[in-house]
Image (cartoon, rainbow, N blue to C red; front, top):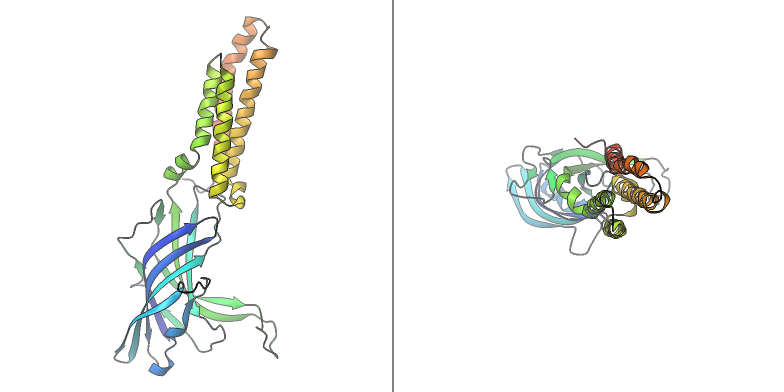
Length: 292
């Protein structure tokens, strides 16, 4: 049986567009079998695409402790991560580092884990994210292929693996303002356009450019799939609000400009409260369910 433990020192290179993140950690193994049969050097990070000098195990030290072979490795890898960003910027993700044998057909390998000794460096700070304690568990990896071996059916082949998992949650109060600043500015300009009685066109144009600039920024920051969630829905709310203000401006300037002052006195005070109320209700409606 091979026992594994880990000490994570770095989580970095979180790339939402390229679907990956980076990690660096110490990994130790304890092998109680025959020294010549120690499989530690054949371990690999299974969800890390090979990248020359990256994604490899560097053996730092090996000792014989009584009847146990102890090995210490340093691992630096870039891991594939399919981000789910429908709740952005209120999103949370489970980072997974899957360790196992590079050869899935290697028989007779069983794992145990050092839960007490596995954790993240207490001094490590992942800016803009809250991180949970590191977990280590024995799991399994299934292959639905005979891998080209004649005489084998396409049954599921299962091999044991060790999973390191870490939940990260974005500090949404920081990301919300910085990411959607252009949209909030557009709302403010729309409010001003409904308050004042002259020069509304300039404010409406400013709101349009502000919202459009925010849309371009989000398109460069997030994959297209993320815009089907909160990040895209909030933009729809902002653009519908701008359309409402444009229609109100046209009604006040052209349709009702020649009407009796009594009609304008009734209509004008209703525009701003109705815009604010509709915007607030729409924001509440699209808010992700995981927001406390």
